[in-house]
Image 1 (cartoon, rainbow, N blue to C red):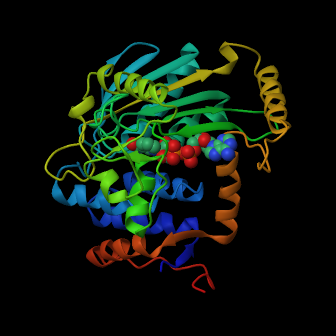
Image 2: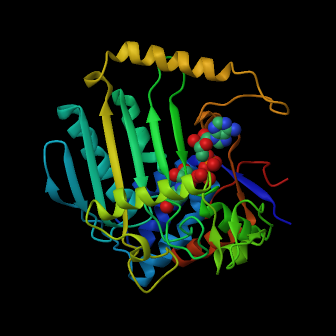
Length: 357
Ligand SMILES: NC(=O)c1ccc[n+]([C@@H]2O[C@H](COP(=O)([O-])OP(=O)(O)OC[C@H]3O[C@@H](n4cnc5c(N)ncnc54)[C@H](O)[C@@H]3O)[C@@H](O)[C@H]2O)c1
């Protein structure tokens, strides 16, 4: 039986930061990675939150991910750049790259930055949402270790390569579509494996391409299934080109798993910022997005559905709930985190009082 003890985001941030510093990451970089992991947990994306910390620490300890992230711009035009992350921390290199895309967009109306030789960057939305406060649309994509078969196949070649598009609104909350190209992110299957619970048969297939409910099978010789059949498979492949081939980095079998402690992961990303003002008056744009959001919400719900959500809405509501009541972390994840804490002498996270009940 797994209890869910709750923690405030500030405790998750503090703990992640101190553990990463313990593993040799400089303070300013540790803070960025900690912010990324905390943002995922705050948004209810448990699969990409603090649960990932032990895997990052394992890579740093094994010497297959650099403790110091040295980003270098290797190609550049006014609107475009390619960044070599030199096997540094994904969140640090990606924050650098998205900031560069935003600067370029201010000057050119659009900024596009590819990153090669990086590592797992967490939730795609963390970077795309950096565009919102500047009245820009943010796009964020990454490739990942092969986990899905090309459509019709039964062996992994394509990653669960996610897409995030973040769109500012006026008085409404922004539209933030952020999702994997698999039915669900691989981290959700990893979480089911940690919790020892079955997965729905629509998430993954076994080594013969038959539906499986066993997370161990899905993550060993099985494959994850793409969303929307051949369409998700096709989009995931296109993203591998944008994030891998285009910036001159790794793609397909060239991308390694986070758990592979004998080599660098060679993950690639692509970030874009579109300056709304370069396309149309910002006020007009935001009014239209507000109207769109309200029209979407007003759609008559199908039978059995209580409410229509706009992409990102569930996560924004979860942020409010997380800040008020704390974030539940399963005992399976806590057990691994305790190992990190004792290794570096970091004080354990203080639970929200009363949340142990
Ligand atoms: N770094 C990586 O390698 C990697 C790989 C895959 C996924 N991810 C991340 O994993 C996270 C989770 O991905 P996921 O595919 O499991 O997400 P998900 O399926 O939970 O959500 C995907 C999107 O659908 C929206 N949504 C969910 N339910 C909805 C509803 N009822 N109505 C309207 N919209 C709804 C959400 O707001 C979200 O924008 C994402 O943040 C993604 O970036 C990272």
